Length: 231
Image (cartoon, rainbow, N blue to C red):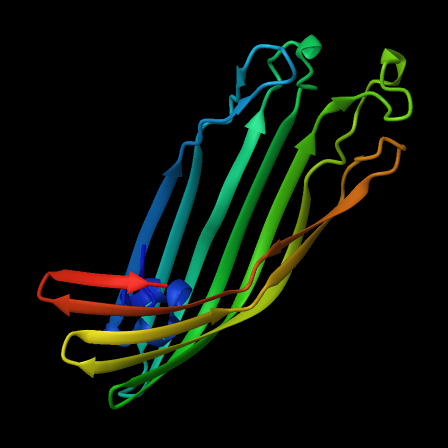
């Protein structure tokens, strides 16, 4: 949900590290998302087929600690993506190639925030971990009708670790009202030897990027209720 302009205590390590300052001592948060995509694939005039990979669990955990009246430390670990398809049980003649893919992406974010009067300044290092697996039975692209060239093109699971940075600002303009700003740098990962895309017998690399993010937010907190807007 929105969080650039309102503090979620330790959870703000991911959305705006400047706003982890809402705590008086220690804040710990556990959470998770159940992602249930409805994936379908239709090849030409063939029937539509549902993917067997229809549920993904995306957990998160974060903790923040007040160091003194000005400094606050936060650490968050977030699985920010989990998805894939599974057509291994479908008839090969339907053109689905026994395809199976699985992608997992996690960010570990240690953050530090400084509080001075109504201003909050924060920053953190994003340590990103990604795991990608792609599998499919495919004929050679140079002789696609020759079933003798049919082979599994998967290079197995491939992993990578990459780094980025994030910064945030927060300002309490009046009691209960906060303005926030946030920037996260682009993070590039490379999954080596993950799949033989051109069926030449050599496994290829795949480059993926998490785009840079930036935004502004405003939030209001009154008692047990809050209203916030991010852009």
